[in-house]
Image (tube, rainbow, N blue to C red; front, side):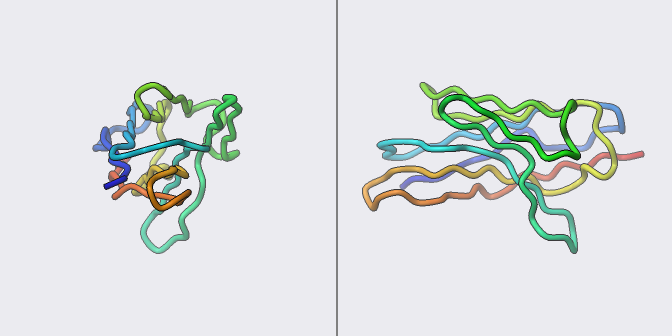
Length: 119
């Protein structure tokens, strides 16, 4: 019943912006850290940004100053605002969060949303 669903991906020109959103749904009893990771074809999945309940944030060096992560605990959502996009940002972006459900704490991943940045 518990799952993460991303939205907001698409095709954008270099220098443009996109806003990704992720909503946790289901019978959720609690949420720990939330974040975003991305995976380009032929490459390993990498963490892009995370945000704690605090909320303290982490950003990969490659996106610092360009991406902003935020969360709305009341709505169980996490957002990634991406600006000054570069072709190397092209990847499938995945939302993740450790969610407390009926079965205990589980690290969930969304289905992914494609971000394509053209030069």
